[in-house]
Length: 91
Image 1 (tube, rainbow, N blue to C red):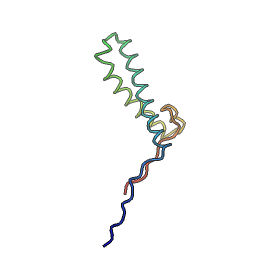
Image 2: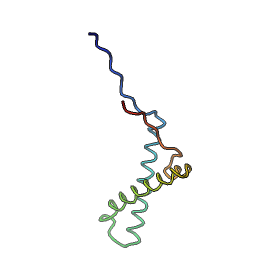
Image 3: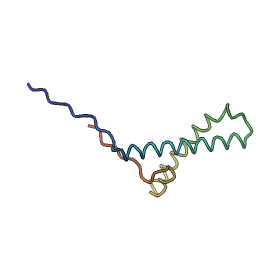
Image 4: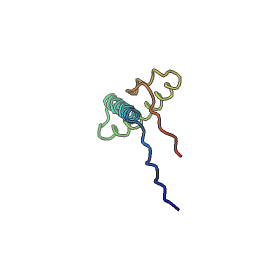
């Protein structure tokens, strides 16, 4: 029985990969900014709370914008890229 070559794993197009990276980094940057502002306003040690606050606020920001994007597609710009990346369906 002949051995058939296996298909190479599919990767998302560069455009979609770029979109996913930009949108993720934008949410992280917003989380860092909000975390920094939160610790500055609350007057607590930055070293203590900034990482936790940044992660929570960045994740919340991303989730909120993604929810808004479902209703208003232009909200995608709030993540630095106007459209969600698309990925090929698994086999």
